[in-house]
Length: 545
Image (tube, rainbow, N blue to C red; front, side):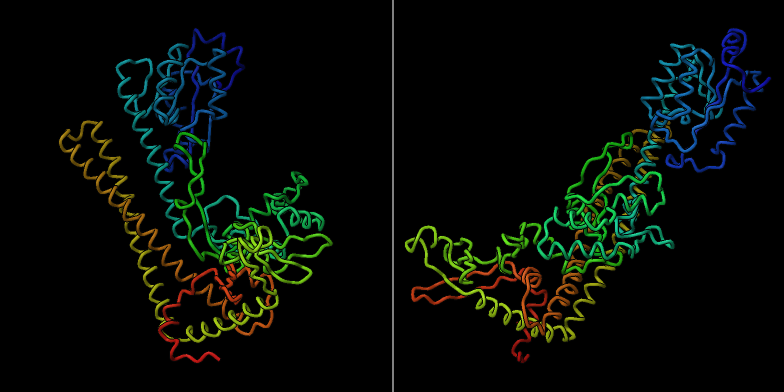
């Protein structure tokens, strides 16, 4: 009997002959990795069974690569349409999980939808038969087990992905703009040399006083492809290329992305459930952040400076006539009243804004020349830089950093062990519930073991969270040392200040004035030197020229 016949002819024959639909599905996402699960093996087994029953095979419906957690599969929907048109009497599957791994959905489909249409569904392996009421309970148990299996697979996939993320491995589908996937290791990023200079230019423009919109306009005027357009060009999908432009949002995203400083921040969103694709944002402190995972395009010191300027919304915006604000804009404050100081361009001096607005009864002038402030700041930076370099040479600093690295590596090992045990307990807990429902374990043993597993998982979760925090703190110490070492070293022989240097090192400058009109300047650096204790310890023995 031929496998395929015209649908109208088959409908006329349905009262005489059982028209059977063979349905096959395979999904690695669901863990279908056994050779017996292959589409060809499913098709052969179903065809053989149908022929043994002398059933007419109406059509074969195959969904290869579609998860069982979603019934919106192209050939499954085609099968539904043929059922609605009355062409199908029987659906033949390998087992119930081929229909769906969602217990609620498969129960409605088998025991309501198909029965109302007088369509029989048979599973040749698990003895599924929706028309045999004696098999309903076993079908429901199979549905529950299939759903647990899907949930288990989903959890295992998440855990496997988290394990890669915790190692600083990139698991995204597409590499971020500025990087490509390493041909030797798809979880490692390499700098895309075609756009490295563009990323650097964006950061430099921002530090030079350009806002997001002006940076975008500058790039568009130079006809530089934006990330979306570049991606199309890079993938050689030339027919799909749509002309798009740089925008405020694109520039801001690049300036905030830690990937350009060499760090990997992943798991920024997550799905609400393994049954839905809807995603929600994860708080920053819960995201997975691993430092120094790949080559940085932007040095850490420059990246930190940009973040600080963005948080304060400070940049040297061009004023009238195209001139820029002075290099201390936004940093000068009156120590006595706390208000910002106002700069007079004609006299090149700062004055307390409270004094200007409310007069001498509210505060004193605190008048000081820009050049005097810059001279004091320059001397202070030079002094700290020389002292820092001397202390850095001490072996104790080296030993301290190396000890921190050793602690970090040890923490990584401990974290891996605890994570592995957590995964094992998860699997054991699933099998325990499964065995209990199948009647293999009595109530007392089940309750005790389940309680033990829950307690162990709670303890493991606490340990894992603590180890993650510990590792990040240790990595922060290492990064801070390396970062500020390079910052101070490069300014040892500095002769002149510019806005980039000021923003990189200084948080604010306070000016106080006593009763005699004597002024004092207090320079607040952005970060405490990570080796300030060593400086205090050795300062009596170090000569600062």
